[in-house]
Length: 293
Image (cartoon, rainbow, N blue to C red; front, side, top):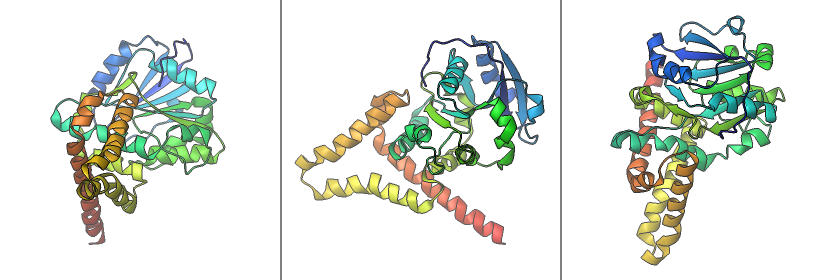
């Protein structure tokens, strides 16, 4: 996501999703108050109460989760990108703020896995539902089109709902786009308190919630380099480990993170990836058994 420097005055309805209390969005609301964009209608949407399109009067609808923080220029850039590419939906993936060793070992995995598996540019360039990904934390709609189809109201509340919305947009022959937040939108401090279980569920979306795909990815990314390190002579290890180094540098710069910690913590991050995916599988098995009883 670039800060394009263009200015707009289109009214935007900003719908902030909270679980129980409006205070969950205090950090986000403070960042909105400091914005250079003032043509905003702010709506607090509680989890138990569905969004009503009648309450929103803007030309654009911006759905945000309460654990996000905006920087100046973000809303201007959303409108510019939507106008230039004639988008019905633009989803932006917030940048992670990794505070502490545990967060640095876990949260960079989301961008690393996504960027290794899925070229985001294909979401806009190929208008087929199979090329669909999105982030629930930030969804920006053209309000005129949204009022016609009401996508957010047609999808059940689950971790894959944003991806399903992108698929429906494409099925209607309309355009969607997904971008990295760069330095214009961040996850706030509440992200660190949301728990690793929810994070692991969202991590599985990169594998289309397919356990087999996730296991194959682990074999290729983790078991592969280990086998190579055991079987090959040290001189031949330059290529595989060079590729790992370059991929960490590339994904770090694309996701506005510092590459050095990600390179140094790569082994711990891969261990965290294994534990998160196995933990997600474990919960699936036991929740399935619980449902059968």
